[in-house]
Image (cartoon, rainbow, N blue to C red; front, side, top):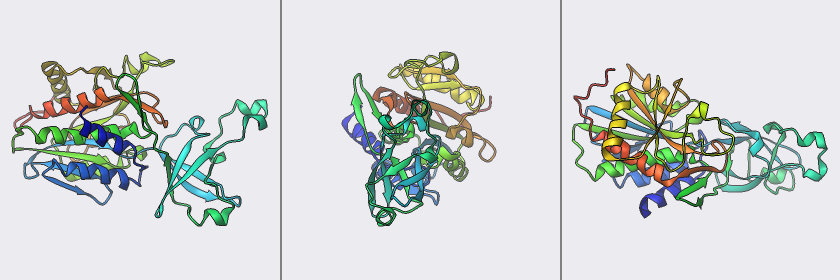
Length: 354
């Protein structure tokens, strides 16, 4: 991955923006897209768009959601500790002892998710996972009035930015689900801007919002665009780690290429085109099966208006929905190349009828 692309990916991963509060990552995403797209804009939900050939009637949509799992402050107790409720699906067993950011109008407030020390817990207590409602965020406040000087109920909370590089061209960060997907669709615009894309093909890259709470940004953005075909980019489960049942998720490794799929949400024609393009261009890819439409933007876009030919391209990811999600630079780069090369094969005459 070149230096400019890597810098953008890291900056995107380092933003704090849970579902419904995505302004920071969207500002970073659209600022970079402005360098390559013919048109950029946002809608009232906060979806961010980057368009090539906005006058073309044949439209291809790219979707990668930018929101991350997080919390929202629900109560501040008399001692000044914050109680929170989740935004999106969070495993409470991963939370105690983590650093967080409370996002306020005046800036980010540092905090930690506290837990009784092991010395003070009974043996039976140690066997149980605390529900989130019994946890708290400590911002160092003296009492409730002190906490209220900076934090209010309704303020969102995310894991603190924690990007690190690992061996073998891999990285770990909170919000890799799905800032990697938002990165890829932005990168596709960059790649296509440097090629001779036909003026009769309009490409709409969208950094969608509120995927983690019901694919909401994909619903509204796809309705507005009315694409003929769409590629959603999200994360997929890697199985090259201990205790993963490959019978459920397939044989998936970091660094061996983006994930392609077969299943009800994958248009038969577009799915075959991705595989054919990967083989022709010698782009590595992996393959898994989808039994149900699933919880990615693909499911919402597919049934927009009178229907859209959809395909899902996934970035293999370890430790999904934790603060240490782990991916490969190579897979992100190859996903963008594959989608760009496939779009170059599309035209208004392409028939997606199975």
